[in-house]
Length: 367
Image (tube, rainbow, N blue to C red; front, side, top):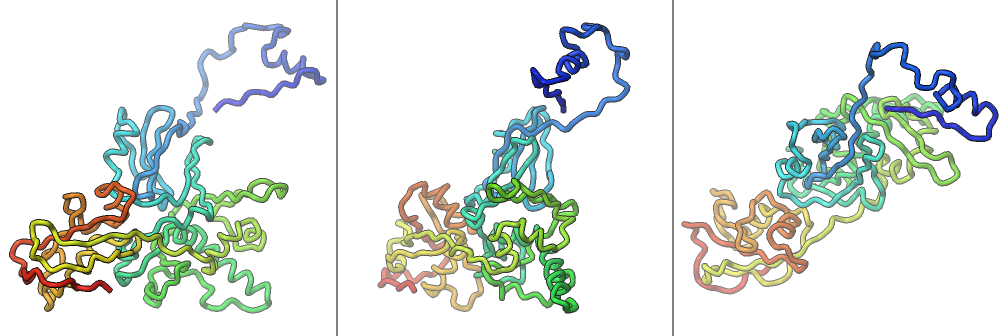
């Protein structure tokens, strides 16, 4: 880091300043320094000069001025990997980018030389996932959680507890026991009763919490910097936070409905006598997994009614001639396999040894 003096020509004392910094009137212009070698050197961290989001939208690849590439976890707020010297940002992206399609729910700015994540109400709620896919084992298979909502709760969960306690004291009452710090491992929490704006407790604040910078309306003082770990739950902090952020923390923000995708299902051309589902257009959340489509086909066709075999052992789902990984979402299938702007065409194919009737019979109606 270097700091240069700001010289203002024409102001009193500017000549003296010029002399002090070795200007043309300096008496010792060009003189050798008293000490030829530094007593100590303070090294700075090379600034980040380039970045790219990973396709899962939870990590960032960054390259610094020395050419070193590192991987940062947006949720953990920390660097999780440093690549070997010589590895380019593009090569690192090829290595770590999973084959998934997730809409971006934040923006990244590295102009300061460090990573700044910005959440805006217009985009913060674009990405979601099934809770069970995020590791919440007790969640039912229909529960979805929003990335932006959960990120806000992670950052301000403790602040909410302190704010509730402060309001109770301001109103002249003792805080309830429910105002105490949350036990994230409590068995009393029922994730399946979660509202769209509720805290699923899926992400936890890292040991070294980040700071939040809240931009104020024009004419109201610029921006406010608040280290998350030092926030006390004051009214001033609440006033500094954007209203929509406070609403998310209070679990009253209107979260947009899940983005949808449409698809059609038909039997594979190599099995013309297979029973057919109706050719009606099926609409489902973009995050719907292929595994759920397999389950849908198996249930609608009445295969393996006693449930002795896993649905994936009975049916394959194909798109564009490629077998879809059951873990893929509809959005991923559309981006990587279908690659068109029209409704996705999915094909189901029975695996060898599966008795599907083979009668060429009538359609099985979709719900």
